[in-house]
Length: 485
Image 1 (cartoon, helix red, strand yellow):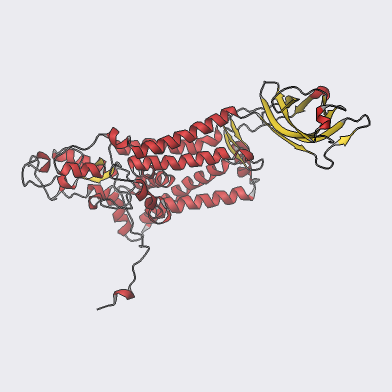
Image 2 (cartoon, rainbow, N blue to C red):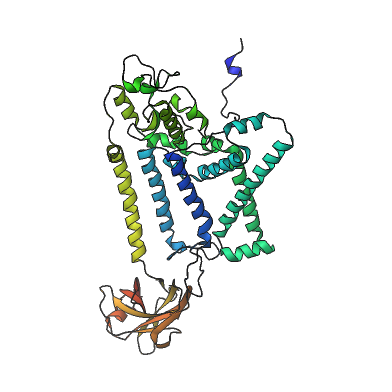
């Protein structure tokens, strides 16, 4: 007898090829719709145009790394406004917690990029090689001319999809039409070509050959989801109380769904739910890490139940709490009670609260940025008539797509006028600062307090610089005026 310690458990199992059968039903149609929308958004978005003016890029969604900005239709995010991006990432995380708490791994089953592209690759494979049985026969057959032709055709189409995926990715980082022309002429930057190659091969390997292994071994979410789900979470489950004991039944034969004592279960052990599963698992074995809750097993089982004249729902979206209640003949809770419970309401409150704060911050932000720094060496200059002058470095950034003119005013810390204080701006004609579109103006401001005025006698006084544009928007920054006392 061999020593068990000489054969330690394996952390990684060699991949067994999975050939899912085509499914038909409401959840398969839902997956088609979501996949079509997701792919359309990903491939089409970089080509949407948005007019921002002559000096600004006209791509609706653009990550402008060269100028360190992010454009999303009418919204422009600058580097110092990264808190918007951070807030969106937090909202995305809370959104995953919310959906997982309410509906299990619904993200994994319908909208995850790995799921979407794997689903696309699977349909291409089925279109070329046939459905499940034909694929199994081809896999087991010898390498002849037909098998080589089918495999090369499939791999070529996968590479085309991967190339389109990698190409679409780089279009988000520069002007798409310009980059496309440069790519076709061989004039694009090597980084663009290398990125496309990496993304193409990654999509080809992940979607074509690794598939479910990415979800099982590479993705952390199956392990995190355990903390997000509870007995009220709606997930794909098998009604064991109704399906067992399994076995063949004749049409019209009473089963447990008809509630006769000692009847057979509704499950005829046809393995339809297993054959359509893209993860290759048997949902009748209970909750499993591999299950992505895509619900294709529900469609397959409902189709069988229709054929044998039994009620649908042997496999269904349900909560573990409901399955326990149904065993005793009680009804489960309603969908609303499962979704609207303290845990999901807390996630939704946090999610919507962050969204409202980000929206208000976006609506209230000024269309220009202002920075004022007093010169420290020297703190002030005494003029020949005894007046005190302070000098400030002003940086004014115009974040709009057209040239703007700005005016500068000075008030005390309560917003009132300051007697005996004059304002001078270096290089500003008529006191107006003209800043080109999407540019920053750096200039000097001179504040002079007349001799004998409170500002000139005080050691330091708080001031406010108020800058307004032609549209009425304004920004205020506090500073200090140093006197000679």
